[in-house]
Image 1 (cartoon, rainbow over the protein chains, first blue to last red):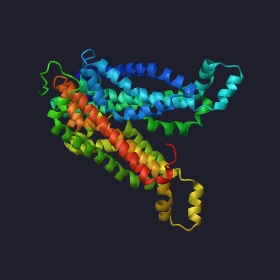
Image 2: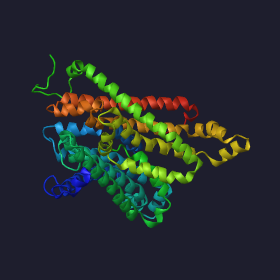
Image 3: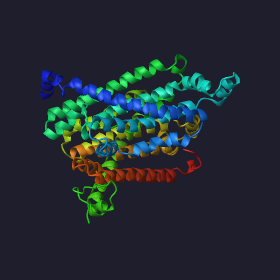
Image 4: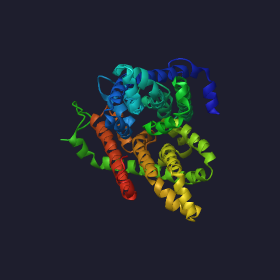
Amino acid sequence: MDLIAWFTDPANWTGENGIPVRTWEQIQISFFAMAIALVIALPVALTLGHLRKGAFLATNVGNVGRAVPTLGVLTILASIPSIGIGNLAAVLALALFAIPPLLTNTYTGIASVDDEVQDAARGMGMGGAGILTKVEIPLAVPLIAAGVRTATVQVVATASLAALVGSGGLGRYVVDGFALQDNTLILAGAILTALLAVLAELVMALVQRAVTPKGLRLQSRSEIEAQEIPAAAAPA
Amino acid sequence: MSATVADASNPWISWSYVQDNWSELVAAGQEHIYLTVGSVILAVVVAVPLAMVIRRSPKLSGPILGLSGVLYTIPSLALISLLWPVFGLSPWTVIIALAVYALLVVLRNMVVGLQEVPADVLDAANGMGLTDRQILTRVSLPLALPTILAGIRIATVSTVGMVTIGALVGYGGFGTLILSGFQNNFWHAQILTATVCCVLLATLFEVLLLVVERVSVPWTRKQVT
């Protein structure tokens, strides 16, 4: 009942510590983290996949990501004086953890394009860049999109942890709630972070559907689903 | 000379930190291990009957896996917070929350492993007059074992990393040291040592469970995983 009172209290919907501001902070942190991860992971994975090289790296980076605790990386980054506590440490840590699923899925998507398809494209007079952009990427879109979805959901969910090292976002309510021994605040924060994560999952599922070429939709559905879970390094 | 928080240098790597705080590190490691093992065992105990139910009525695999997929999306910070009014500041809060995540990986691999048993093999077993129970224990389970064990291994390694979040309720193994080091004026040596210990523990579990996989399914040894 305290929860209903908390959610209906106008004071919790306005100002620095209001729900809209905290939600927006979490979305911003997640967005920048994903942007950095994409800029780093995509070119590397596209190149390696096209050349069919570095399978070992692309598949094992996920195992390393699983073994490293998010909390450890967050606190290490926040303890480096030039980064410091706050949103920057969160963005960098989350970007690091978004790279493995992006790398693995993009690499697998590109590298698993049939060699014969590559040969045919070359026979039609396409160069390496043409083959990559006109043949391999379109065929790999379902897997790349699945990787982006996995990484995004993971980043949005993990962004709540960033409050432990003094950044904003919805995790703030949970961490402040524990500090103030305020159960209502803890529960409200937990519900909001969970809702945002589920929302991110739904939105990314729609995005994934929308970008997948029609001809590939039915055929690759089970393949995508099979990829998703192993790629999800660690919910946090 | 012992390294203290007041050390102006505040080094990241400090052997004297390890020496001075050896007993704390060991205690944190023990807590980390029992939280991890407890969560995975709980997940397996719940997953086995669910996998059997799905094996009998495959129609249920969608709803059951779907529900555990939704649970997987919930951030651990949120799940621990939602559970703590029920279980309080106890290890159970952490164990149950982490078991939820491990459950999805373990259950999915059990279901996939059992589904991937070739239909001809099942037909042959049936034709030889094996009962349903015999088919399960002598044919399906041995064939599904590599996939099932891989699921347990992946779940265990992920759990090692997530245990650190338990620091929020005071049961986080090395995570408690990471967080207290952070709150103690960014005590670099403690943060880095505890993080490295956590990675080492995850690696140890990975290697240990890979060995278990090799030993228990010797016929797949030549296969590349």
